[in-house]
Length: 295
Ligand code: NAD
Image (cartoon, rainbow, N blue to C red; front, side, top):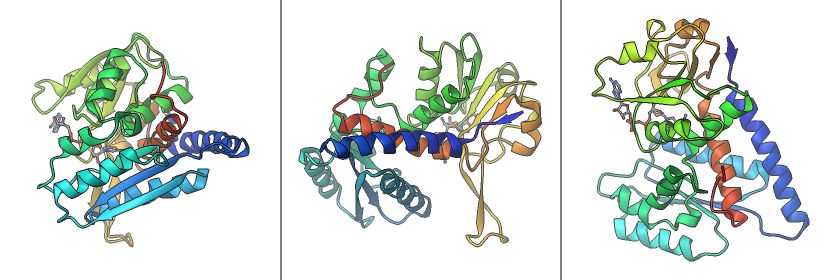
């Protein structure tokens, strides 16, 4: 069994981007600038945004963090996004989800200029991704593809079972794995809360992607010997021995499943760091006038 080390691969992506930014700087060209919007003070969102902003600084990007109270009127937030759309110094815009209930997430996403939509959630980018055109690919699915690519994992002709069909993870992963690309060319089964024979389908999988949001959902009896397992889940479990009072666990019962796998991503240290690397890659593409990832 080999661990797919998201920290290591993410660092490699960041090192490459840092070199590219240094070269832009040396040529007197514009440095990528990411604007992040955080509404309210959800603990997990705070952590995610902080590490995105920190990663920008590490590789020489500029970043701006806009923080708003969770009572911000929807119109006010949309106006701020419109200003960022118009600001030529801003290359990428990300709005940390989830948003408070009174704000329509779809409207917020649709307001972001697709050419600055580095989270890849705008319908324009989703449509382009589905059509195989250059597009900003959502960061987590993009990060998964980058880690598969880094470890040269053969995906062609494999049966991939993706558990979870969110727009952020499961659905785009299923599309990317089934496209005629490398990584890609899988036969994909997309499972969700209405899937009847989930354990049986999982047992047939060469590649399992777990994006459910339930700790230890995928157990050893659901995984075929030699399978590749990508654990997207980030679940906070109470743990009095930790200073924070919690520890992070994935959607996969790692201790029991790992010995059966050919490759597996740990939590933390797997898909999480890759998500940030992919976001930074998207921001670089936006800053250099490219309309996203090309196949
Ligand atoms: P979501 O709640 O939007 O979607 C969960 C999906 O799981 C749904 O499609 C649902 O149908 C499916 N599901 C729920 N119960 C099920 C069941 N019993 N059987 C089969 N399917 C079931 O969640 P999401 O935003 O896709 O996130 C999933 C997990 O990934 C969460 O733990 C989240 O924190 C994590 N996540 C991690 C990263 C990262 O960077 N590593 C990024 C995004 C999300």
